[in-house]
Amino acid sequence: MNIMIVTDMEGVAGIVDFPNWCTPGGVYYDKGKRLSTEEVNAAIRGFMDAGAENIYILDGHGPSSLDIELLDPRAYYIRGSIAASVKFMTDWKIDVFAHVGQHAKSRTEYSQLTHTQGTSYFDETINGISIGIPPIFGSGEEAFCKEALELAPNMETVSVKKGLTPGTGDECTASEYAARNTTAIHVNPIKAREMIYAGAKKAATRYLDDPSQFTLPFSELEPPFVKVVKFRKDQQREDWVKTANTIEEIYSKRLIY
Ligand SMILES: [Zn+2]
Image 1 (cartoon, helix red, strand yellow):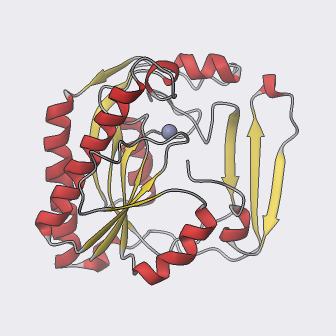
Image 2 (spheres, rainbow, N blue to C red):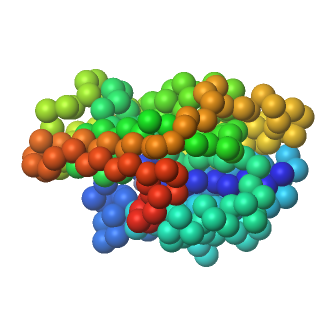
């Protein structure tokens, strides 16, 4: 079994805010990368102990969420263009996806460091995402776990912190929204790694036992695909609409983050 782990940073236990923890130059950015890398390593250990063969790490945080020198050397590290990476996925024979360090989408209540792409986005929709590879595992904040289970009810999830801010924050500017949802109760990072190891091992064991239990609940939608991005009011931008016949075209210019 070959697994691709898509990583992010805002959903990692112990990460508190954007400027100090998730941004280069922030006083805790290096510590944040270490916390993220150790959660990813815990997932790698769990997957490997359950019998995974190859693990590819797609570093999904804008300025990077990982300290590559601390990353488990058994995993391959990928960074750069989404379109180029997607082309290679067939060669790599990826069977399943997993997510570590994830946060929920923009406008989610009781979610921490909530956003879609960046905090200037109000919402992003697409009429369908052609997903041929099911997710088996996801760790991050609790609201992310709920969001993931709505799409893929059988995947294993591990919640490592819980946001404590009610309301969707629709009235906020981008910078107000970035500062709004920082309050959370965190699982101790050492404990979080133990939970992630156990969850990843269970997910891989279940997949190897019966891959069919991880199929997605919705079928692939037909092209054309229409992506609509709505921005927060202070951005003073019209909705951005893009139509294409493939998902690769929709995301052709997007770098991985
Ligand atoms: Zn991120």
